[in-house]
Amino acid sequence: MSILKNFSLSEWLRQFGRSIRRFPVSILLLAFLTCFILSLSHGANVPEKWQFFYIFYAATGAVLGISLQLLTEDFKHRITAILTQLLVHAAWLGISIYLAQFERFSLPQFIAVSATVVTMVLSVFLLCFYRKGDDVPFWNFSVRTFEAIIAGGLIGGVLTLGLILFAQSLEWLFGVDVKNSVFADIPTVCMVFLAPLLSMNLIPGGEAKRVAQVQPYSGFLKGVVQYLFIPLLLLYMVTLYIYAAKILFSWQLPVGWVSYLVTACMVGLVAVIYLTYPLQHESGNSFFKTVTRWLPLAMLPLLALMTVAIGRRLGDYGITVSRLYLLVFNIWCYVVCIGLLLTRNKRIWWIPALFATVLFLISVGPQSIPNITQRQLLGEARKAFAASGIKQYPLTGDQYDKWLSGVDPKVAASIDAKLQYLQRDFGFDSTRELLGKDAIVGNIAKMARDGVEEGTVQGFYADGLIDNIELPQGFTRVSMADFNCDGSPMVGDKVSFDVKNSALGDVGTYHFEVSYKQLISRDQDRNPNGSAEPLVIDNGKAILLVDRFSFTLLEDRTYNLYGGGILFTK
Image 1 (cartoon, rainbow, N blue to C red):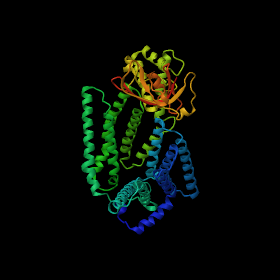
Image 2: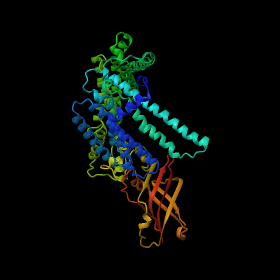
Image 3: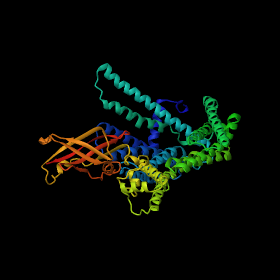
Image 4: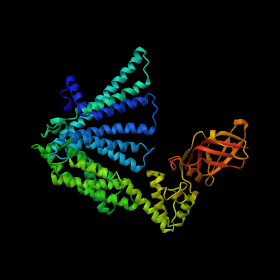
């Protein structure tokens, strides 16, 4: 790599000092992250939400610090640069504290956080060139920065393997007792702290950050692009053109997987444009200039094929998060191809900048695709319920089953599938305003079998109940009880099991029975905040207070049940 050609220890030490002055916030956060992970591996007891906060904020804050420094070091006024960094870091700190309050993210939250982090990473390459009129400095900086990341990772990886082998050799050769924690500490220090520090040390700064001359192009890379990347891309495009001709000849709509092949072609096209960008500014290279000049035009019919495929999926099956993202990506592809044709491949900074901007806008906030999808599907379900005269929500399991059996089968199947999609991908809370926790969705095909679906449900309630429990009237003994049964057949929707307990001289066997819907209503996924009450089962002779269980229903209508609780006997 060009960034390593002048390697010397004295030069690197000088660069390290410069990096510490250049990226102080990022280095401090990485040092904190390293120390925190080391403390966890050595047994530090930290609540899970604060573990997430410390790791998430330190890691993302370090990336944010690099991006902000690259942006603000070009500011004319030092005070403006400092205030900008302080305000952005304070805002991100507040956001990170807010996110740490959630035990787990909903789908919209997960997508919003992921998109924000991706945007943050891309900003390292993009943000400091937003006012430049020439993309050559951007290309040179991006290549050098990417090389810096690769070099830091490789050096950190080699150092990790070398130190681990050294520690292991001490044990093999000299019988030194090396603790297991050492083998976790080494990669933590090398990959979490030293590797990023090395990469930051190699990020171009000063005049090297704004090199406007086209650098000598690698002959090896030129050969790889010409004899590997471009032929492979053309092979994909020709295959899709043949498939498009087949569709026109047979007059059939394209299938869904076409979108993924077109996406692969588009990614390959952008990669070829970026890899050959310096050749656009050199004399000669007619092959590369001709091919890259017409590739965006050749891509447009394939994008139209992708549009038709997406439209078919939306028309046949309705909206989902993934389909809407694919649609927006398709529109972005049109813009990129048209923009490349208009600029003759001379401008490229705007392509990833537009991608990052669009990704952020469609992923974060009330206008995000996940939130739009959730509102749309809930609105369709509410409209269908209202058409049947339903005005009070949420519906109980019996009310929902009655509605399914009383409306047009196509409507029932459509709404049931949409509610199942919401519960599966957005969580049970997403349908809480419409359905009670005992309502079972995604069940149209199984209605003839008592409305019971295969799968696993689990419940966990408060620990230590036995220490604070009072005996029900008429009962004389209380003890802990565990129960399990494997391969028992389900009769209707009834789940039955035996509890055998010999504690306190009680040697009897007690038979209990509970409905599947009662178990569903206590499913921990449907009650993520632990608000469900323990399940109480009374068989007339004994009472079982279930405080934990795991129930799995198999395709052959047999079930496995494991659990425990408190048994009251007379």
